[in-house]
Every structure is written in structure tokens, then in C-alpha cells.
Length: 275
Image (cartoon, rainbow, N blue to C red; front, side, top):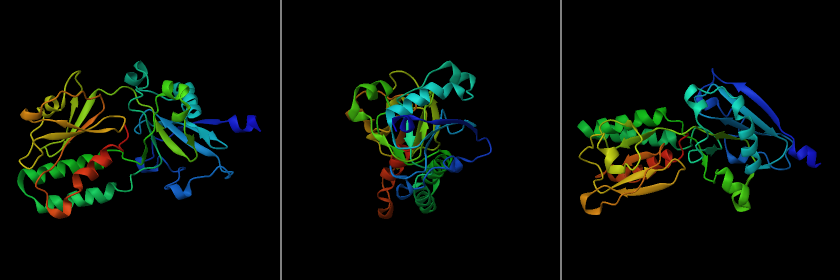
């Protein structure tokens, strides 16, 4: 019985013609459809360095499996994927590693629709900022992320960080990124080259904020999905580091009452984006 439980099937899949929404064609679209431990259907984990990578590694398990085993099998076989020259030079950037139940996120289209309504409500630079944000959200791969540690070294020594994977998922193991996303209440969303010791204010110098922007704090979504609020005003300055691959979201102020939660809704989407 033990040999059956530990056996896996590994496949390399070419998915060049698939859209991002089809990446999880074999993955449950919601938790209700997830296979249980008594289900004879095999559990599949799609492993990739990026959702834009045309090649994927598929791990197949006959029963639920610990995340440590999934990571171990992924590491052992990830070189079978076709990597770009840049990816081949580096190793996995574990801070950005992410596990997803499905794509797209259930709230993505709703938030985009709300922003489109807000854009129709506003004019001038405020409308331009909202439309730029909408365009960026439409391009981002945003799914339902599982917020659990994927630090392989920590998981190997701490059983509490080694949960059971009981349904099919997608695992993204990216190389180290070299940019930071800046979006929100700015005229134009931008990707800015990551710089060591740069804080939120340093990055915000690369964009033009609109009049209806938060002038005291910016939301920073670190690549592991952790959400922080970093001070950006002269009276509350405090240097806080920002990791490569993070997103900086400058919130909208003076929002109409019906859009009072839009900032938090956008931040939630950004923490669920795939690296």
C-alpha cells in the first residue's frame, strides 16, 4: 500500500495554444469539486516557472500528498521544462513561489466592472488612472492563491508548515524577478526596475499620482502575498524594504460611498496574482 501512495506520474505538457484561463482545465473550479482522500481520481499538480511558459510539468498522485513531497518532486523535475536563457541562469525565487486552486479569481471580473463604473463616474486624471488600472488588472493572471509557506528548507524541518494537498492545483516556481509593479491612483501603471534599499517613496517618484490619491500611506503587496501599509508622507517617513516582484498600490481617496471598499478589493486581487 505504501508503494502505491508514494507513486507519481510525471508528464511534460506543451500548452502553447492554451489561454491562461485554460491552464487549470484539469483542476477543480471550486472547493466543492475537489477530490477527497476517498476519491479514486488522481490528484494533479501543474508546475510551471510562469503561466506564460508554454511548457508545464504535471505531477500526478493517486492520493492526497504533503506539500513537501510536491515541492521535492517539482525541484527534481523542473529542469525538464524549457526555460528562457534568463530563467536558466537563476534558481527558484522562493519568496514569489505560489500555489493556486484555480484561475481566474472569483472576484476579478466583479472588481473590474466596479472600476469601469467608477471611471464613468469620474473625469480627467481620475478617470485616466482608473482606466490604466483596469487595463493592468485585465492583463494580470489572478487566481485563488493558497497562502501557505513554500519555503522548502523551512517545510523540511517544520511539520506544521507541511499541509496536505487534497485537490488539484497549479504551482508556480518563478526565477528571481527584477521589477516592481506600481499601480492605483497614478496616471499610468508602470513596472519599475527593482532597486536595493528603495522604499515606496523612491518607487512612487517614477509615476505621477492624481489629486484623489492617498498621500499618507501606500499599500505594498510583497511577492509572498503579505500586505503592508508603508508611510509615504513627510511627517510619517519610515524606511521599509520592498522585495523584488512586489506590487505598490496607491489607494484612491474621496471615493463615492458605493465604492468605499474598492481599495481593499483591489489589494486582495493583487495579493492573489501569479508571479
